[in-house]
Length: 164
Image (cartoon, rainbow, N blue to C red; front, side, top):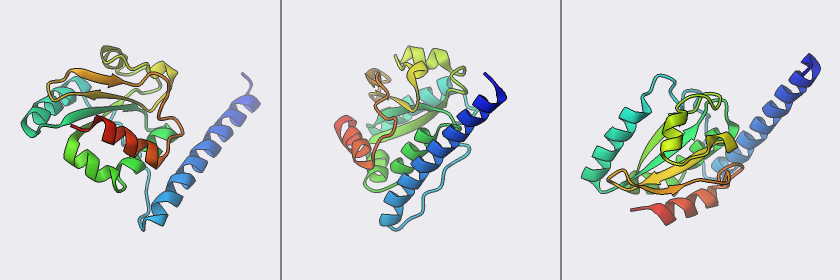
């Protein structure tokens, strides 16, 4: 790949990311808040095995399900999905029915074994989600990039379908 094609690829990726954030911003502005991307949404220092174990323990006590969100801080769709999580009615649905665990996938090279354990094919793209019951049993694993270029309504439907 030449420098010129690499620059074009980066420019295209930046344009797509900006468009996605603008689309999410329009939805949020209509609701009276201004969404902001979280540059540290997926922690590189986190231990997802420990985080999931803690989520299972908490979910058992609170009778909730666990929502595993695999992604990377560089991922525009992951940032937009997080903005949708924080907006009504999704924020209430998550607070009442889910324990949310963000799992960093690096550049498709981190926590691959965790994704594999929950049948989440991160190599097909992110964000990628899985839902566990309050005992840690897998109930749902994304297969076909269902949350790439998603909408607020699609996220709400998903949460309502899988809530406890």
